[in-house]
Length: 193
Image (tube, rainbow, N blue to C red; front, side):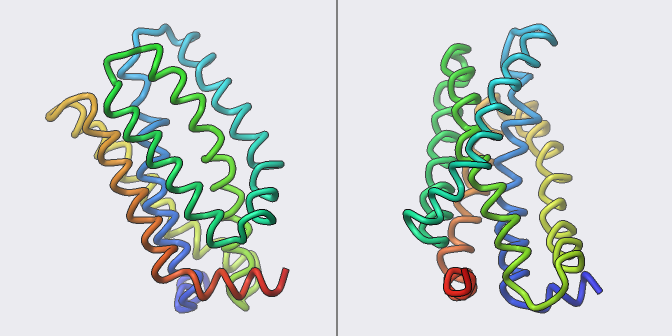
């Protein structure tokens, strides 16, 4: 049962950290188009560049980060880089060139993080992978559901930078979840692999 699987501390910690990470992910994905003057084709081209970098870093960057820094440090470094990009987006939201470059650049940490989160969630608990995946995805996609709406409200009522500040705060929350509560669980995965 996927919800019972969340009783395993490591799976729950990863799910909550991913929920928070998705707050930042969807600040970029769902809100950025409202900050730019591009046509639908231009936005598509922008996210094509983002997606290519995300895919490359998911396949080659994440394994390298894991080997080079260990799993916990790879998470912390990459969540820190993503937070820095979100802060830079908030500070430069009126500069279309800067926003374009930063959105494409954030494909790198997002690719690494997608792989690290998925691999870790599948290996952190003793439950079968489909059950772990269902429980983990239930929690993480709550962030994916809430973030676009929250970002839209913040952007509409406070200003264009507010969704990126919100995303940065969410990602810092995910980083703290990993650093404080996830370290022991991630060390166990590292020891097995």
